[in-house]
Length: 345
Image (tube, rainbow, N blue to C red; front, side):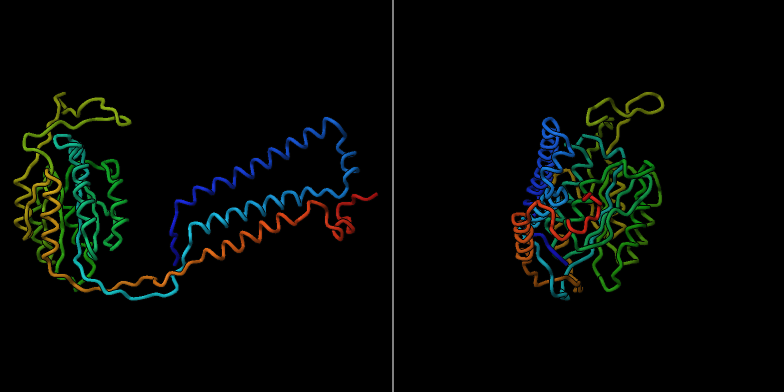
């Protein structure tokens, strides 16, 4: 296992193709200029020891040497020891509604972006807890399996949008049913499922599915985003507003927060309904719930004792630059004597 300490130095790798392209342009210029003054065969006779191959070999050594020296600046490290780490935490699954109604802007910047802000801040506050993410609209889909990699969770969450779901609608029951399958640790006594939505449910069995989750030891919490008075669903093309969603009668669709359904799901799931319209208050309430939860100990394996490996790259980089400096662009004597290409007449 390896680590890169300073990835920002990789930007300097752009120097390598610039050097190579510069050399090729110079080589082409020299060739075209020589042709203006003398015949190609005559130039070959005047400088019989000139080796084109060695010229390219020299620039190859230079580019390779520069590449290795730049990589050494990034300080690659190698893990030399695999350790078993004991951690304490709970299992948390977030089910995020990405239906078109979540694009409504009655809550700035939009219901979906507000939901992402909340989940990002909650993840930032997690310790050794494991987290998984589900997205749903007309159907539910796994976005990220349950993991301790919080950075990956935030990355996947950032890209969640309605286009990732093939069918529109809001199937909260499918999200809860899929969430039940996420918890793979039978010894984990504290399992949390957070459903974040505007509560527009196109199915009627969400509450019944929640009862199934309770039997599996899962507490279901709901987070409502949006306003009761609602708002239109914007239609955008390349980020520019082109209109609002309309129904079959040509009237603008107004989507509203259905808090009553979310409260009923939370009550049936031994959880709590949380108003998600105020980001900081919502994050604090969720963090408080998780902090006071009983933690289970679990084991994970990871590499440790990372050692610097930059010296190898410096050594080989200098070696190739040394070869570039001292390698002459003349033909090698013993190869020339072999006359492999019948150049001698």
